[in-house]
Image 1 (cartoon, helix red, strand yellow):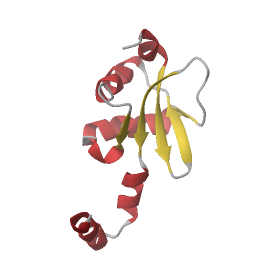
Image 2 (cartoon, helix red, strand yellow; image 1 turned 180 degrees about the horizontal axis):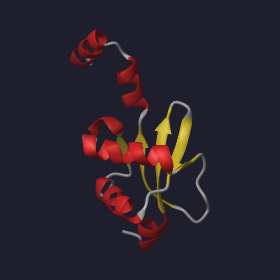
Image 3 (cartoon, rainbow, N blue to C red; image 1 turned 135 degrees about the vertical axis):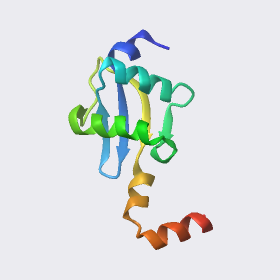
Length: 100
């Protein structure tokens, strides 16, 4: 683990509108480093509700549309699949999961 990721780490969140960068506080950064310890990119659908809550809080308060030169990437969270699942009506979501 790079010490720079601990102090200047950001998380890239990929949405249909494009990527956003979340700038967590130290405690949140430690949790995010643990989440991305084995993978550099994760789909949002594999996260626990508590982990999604952290991302949601960061997205409301600490986001930027671009990464600064001094930032180091902790990991990438792909939210496109999560957004598509929320858009499907309840009946269609159950059908698509079974057939996929």
